[in-house]
Length: 38
Image (cartoon, rainbow, N blue to C red; front, side, top):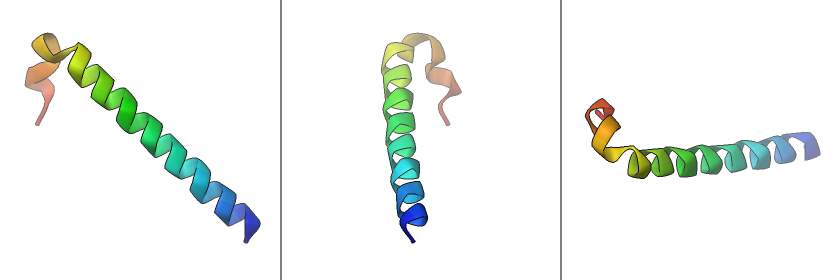
């Protein structure tokens, strides 16, 4: 039970970090990479 709880927390943190990185890349590379967005 504890292991599952830790795993869920880690997965949530990784997801948040991935979203932040994705947003930063979109903002930073908008003029060049904007057409890759679907």
